[in-house]
Length: 75
Image 1 (tube, helix red, strand yellow):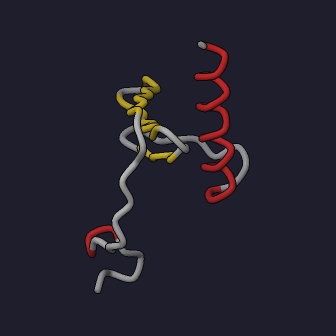
Image 2 (image 1 turned 135 degrees about the vertical axis):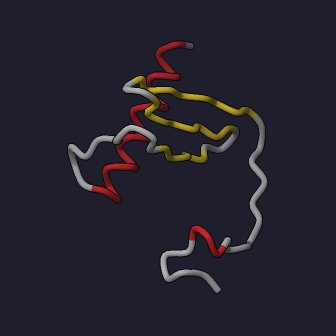
């Protein structure tokens, strides 16, 4: 089971690097979320410590854009 968790974290970082570039790391306070078929993974860097949190179950998808996170300043 630990091997599958490590594979999931590795896959999350591969997706992260697709967006931000190979070899790009997290800076303190950064975080990102990866959605899997039956769980989500929250990855963060807090005080130099890499933290991961899996939340199991089918994720809910809501078709909504939150202005505070919109790249163009919101709707």
